[in-house]
Amino acid sequence: MKLATIRCRRRAAALLIASAAVSAGMLAPAGASATGYLYCDYPVAPQSQCPNNLYFTFGAFTNQSNYPGVGTVSVCERVYLGYGTGGSTISRVCGNNSVSSGSDLFYYYDLYDSMTTTVANNSTVTHTIDGYAAD
Amino acid sequence: MRLTDMRRSRDIKHRVVAICALGVLAAGIGTGEVLASGGGDRAPDVALPAGSVAPAPIAAADPVLVQAFAALRGPQRVGDAAPTSMEDNDALTSGANPELARRVSDAPGDVVYLAPANGGACTLSAIGLESECFSTANMLAGATATAIICAPGLPTDQVEVFGVLPDGAGNVNITRADGSSVTLPVVNNYYEYTARKDAPLPSRIGWEQSTTHHEVDSNVPADASSTKCAAEPATPPSLYLHPGPAPVAGP
Image (cartoon, rainbow over all chains, first blue to last red):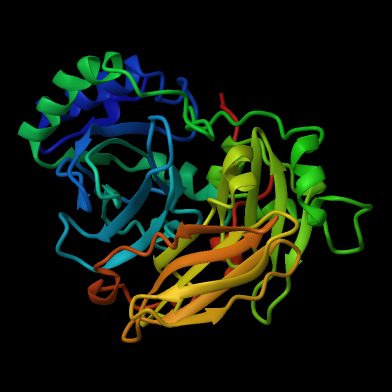
């Protein structure tokens, strides 16, 4: 179980999201090389970024945005260098229902760069958007 | 360095994950159950990954897709199968099979493949740029336009839109934000369009099929012009690629 390896600036918040991820079956099994985190999973205003995002001190290798509902919704994933959303963007992909950072983060992941992963609703109506990132 | 090696070395270090906007997060989790029972939610078109455990690559392409996409029909030519090193995380977790892929674009500096996957197909790119997975339903509807605003391999002053269209899509064009439109070539069911950020951005993609006009959003966000992208790293493409076989749970 990887929870013990998570050091969080806001430990309570980390446990909260980790619990949510476990209940959603998103965490890798014990011993797996990756740990995944489900986040956002929250109604996001039209053409807005989800206010809840994840910060990885040593980077993540994937960030994905997913619309879990019926129909077609434009969603985006976006990853910033550093803490918060003020830094340069190193991956931004938008598409229908589900998009991935692909291999955009690999270079920075290799450098142990810190990153903030976010997801967004690129449509004109409020929708629930799921984020998934793994380190 | 192989990605698995990178991960191994990173396991030595402490990893820190912090969640921003704690209040919003708590509210989101609190309302999750209500939203889930509120109707409308369904399984994603392409399943979300479950950790690092990837499903086995599919054994055969969806016959419906094969029938609708000429690029997936017929025998593979030399160079059609995508190198297994090209699989990215999304493709891995979607069960994409690079051995069943077809090369749909070989523009200088990049090669793009279309690989059948579980419930759809994924595009795979030699430089990791046009990598996305689509459901069968979205592929048949032509709802695959994917916009890249910032990525290694894409100049920071450009945006790119790519996607696939089924057989029979004709008179394909892309309409820009200022109302102007240009013909969009579709080769092997695949299209790709690059524009400068300081020019009118791609807005809609339209085509005729069976005498019916179809249009989809380009998915380029409204603020794409002002997005500040990190400078493109001078890195060999091999560093962007996933190292072959699917990552599996280790000891």
